[in-house]
Image (cartoon, rainbow, N blue to C red; front, side):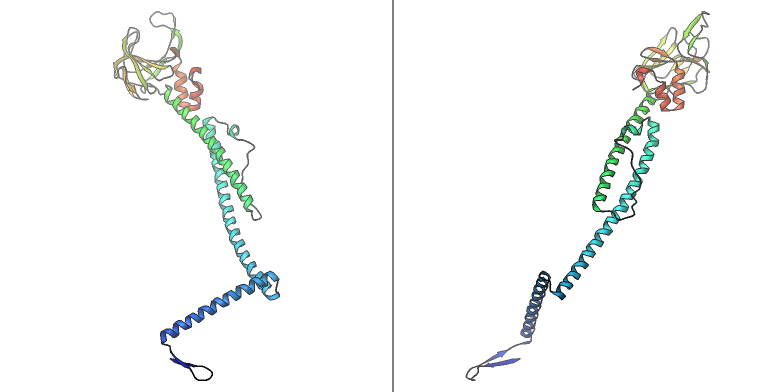
Length: 317
């Protein structure tokens, strides 16, 4: 494309040649300039109209702003509602955990009311109106406080249950012989050799020679010997001054210093020492003082709480 430019008197002229590429670039440049000018004018008109309150422009600006605010409020409201539903679910689960904790606390012997600071409060997060951000924040803080309280409660219960388990493992609650029955109880009786009243410091289990003798609880073998009165004898130390004694055995399967587990075979029933027939003489000593083994064996069958109550005072903690 050719353009010839002349002045008003026709004395001077100039020829301009535009190719297709130049025309496209020129068109794009003009279009961009027009768009920028239109955008600037649009922005200036709307700002000026909004500030000065022009009737049409002011109404249009308010409508646009109102629509944007409504969209933002709707977005915030939807998120707050979703958070409220999640908080309600969390609070319901916390109530279930609370109920479970109260049931378990009975087994641990813990009163949950003693560990709570303030009156009990709860309930699902149900509201007939939309909740504000401040109300949701307050609910979150309350849930955090309740969670810390329940954590303390469960920690105490865990400690108490562990303590009961240790006591159960320590106490000689395992019957030392399966195939046999108690033929002589703990207490005063007529001595079969002298015919006089004498204190029987254990329980006799009548059984055939060779019947396995089991450790009533785990511990360390502190005595393995032949005693003039007890015959072949084993003593197991369970800690805290608690010792069990197994006497009149025909054979000993452990030696001093061995570690034994609850229910482990440590000897066999026999008729050695001061004995009138095959049987196991079983004793429980606390700080060297004979105790009635029946209390330990019966408490072991009834559960850890009964076992803890049945322990002598030096072993209760």
